Length: 190
Image (cartoon, rainbow, N blue to C red; front, side, top):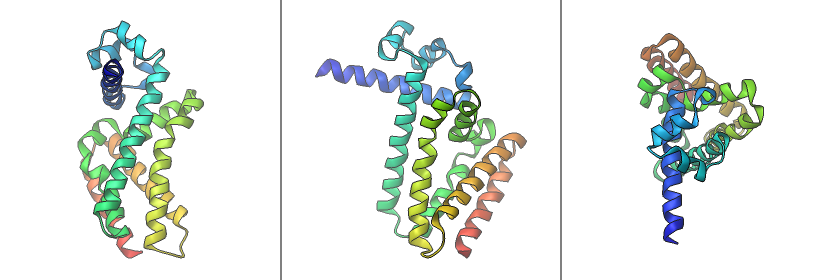
């Protein structure tokens, strides 16, 4: 059991390092050597734990999905109303504005990159959006019964991704601040 725990710990180090690296470097430009350096794991050991770079990406997506589900479950347990939970979701780009301005949205940029040349990997990476979308549908269903919760959820994702993309292109934190306020006003008007 001890060896298995150590193996899982090493894999987690690799996954976390790759997750961070993905935020700063294109997946398709990233090499096994980059991942080995970022994780401080010798390349030979890296190959022992993950046979391909795609295998590491799959583990990163699974890790991100797990973390997202935990965050959303925590919000469901600790934030009383669907409106307050939606407002908390709207804050994500604002809380990460320095990173968003420098690198874009980690989920959006990865999906865009993979979608251009690796649709099979994009389909797996899309799970990250699906987690948010399903959670948003539930929040909107509870918040504004009778309205099309799926349409509202997609609208929220589009606004969030759009502001992240434009803030990244323009390298302007003010875009994030202004657009998050607009999203908050929209939510309160529903």
